[in-house]
Image (tube, rainbow, N blue to C red):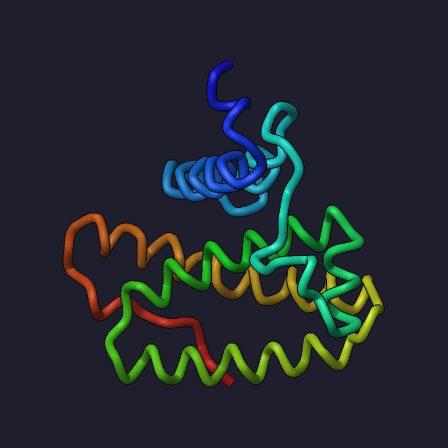
Length: 150
């Protein structure tokens, strides 16, 4: 297939599109994530450049295909929600994300801790990301709901 020759970045973008499309088709976040990781979809990459990873949590993510996949999935959900909320809600979402990143840093290089933290955040964000995407498709943004922010 021609798209397979485009490189890792293109494959990553395509995986995100497959994931979001599957969620929107009602397959659910878990099944959509499995679809995005189906054979032929290439190697997952995290939302950041692993060559610039400095912290223990970033290095642990870059060392684990599963954590890289979870990081990318959360990144897709986060940006979908952030792109469809009002300015006040967006600022709250950004502040909440910074607090969550601080919690992630507390896991250090502990892969089990990181995986649990990512899965919990993805489960929280998934329904809101789907709702935000539907609202965006109807061109009614901003105003989508945000997840309950601690």
